[in-house]
Length: 370
Image (cartoon, rainbow, N blue to C red; front, top):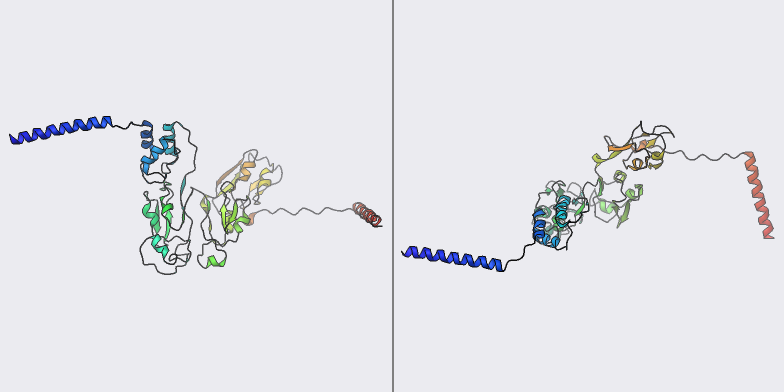
C-alpha cells in the first residue's frame, strides 16, 4: 500500500504541476509573429553571423522589424532573398554573388622565406614575430585561421605553398574568413571576375621584386595599356573600375610580374556573320586593337589581335557580331596598323598663292612698325 500511495502522490503532483505550467504558459505567452517565423524558416540556419546579427534568429527579428533588408543574409544568396522578399511582400533587387578572394600569390614558391617558423599554427601568433616568416609583410601566412572559421569547407591551405585557396563554388559569402585574417589578405569580390589584381604591397620597383616574384612593382603598364580608362593607380597599386572594365585582359598581358591576373580560358573573341555583314565599317572604327579588317561595303573579318572586349558587337547596327570563348591565344602582332595620313600635294599654283599671302603679311607687319 505504501508504494501505491507514493505512486498516487507523485502522479497527482505531476498532474498539478503540469496544469500549473500550462496555465503559466498561456498567461505569460509571447504573441507569435507569423511573419518573423516565416522569415526564419526561409533563412539557411548557418548561424555564421555574416549578416552582422547574432545568428539566424537575430537576423529574422531584424528583417521582420524592417531594420535589415531582405537580402541581409549573404549565405542565402539571391534565392534566399527572393523567398524572404515574398514573405515580406517587397521586391528584391538582383545582386551579383560575392565570394572570398585571396589578394596574394605569395606562396613559398614566390615569396622569400625569412626563417623557418616552428611556433603555434596561427596567423596572429606568426605575425607577431618579425611581421611573419615571409619577407613580404602583406603576404598570406597560410596557417589556417580562415580555414578553421569556414563552416562550408570552402577554403583550405595549400600546404606546399603555404597560401589560402578558395573554392568559389562552395563559398557562401558569409565573410567569416575575411574577419579572421589578420593580414587583410582576403576580400569579398564579385564572382567570376576574369581580371583581378593580386598584390597589396605598395612598395615600388626592385624593393618588391626582392621580396616576391609575383608582386606589383607599380610600373603603371596596366593603366597605360587600358583603352577604356578602367584602371587608376592608388598608392602605387592599380585599382580596376568594374563598371568600365571590358575584360579585354590586355592589362594582364602587359604585366611583367603576373600580379595582374586573368582567367585566360574565359577570354572571348568576336565573330562576324559573313551573311549578315553589310560592310558599314562601324565595328572597324570602334575597334581600338586593329583586330577588324575589311573595305567599306565588303564583308569584314576578325583577326587574331581581337581582345574580346565586345565593343564592336555593341556598335554593329545589324547585330551580326557575336562573342564566343577563344580557342587559341591572342596574337597582338596580328593587329592592323593604320597608315599615316598622306601629306597634301601642293601644286605650283597653290605655292604661288602661299608665297603671295606671306609677302602681303610681311608688308602689313612692316607698315605697322613704321
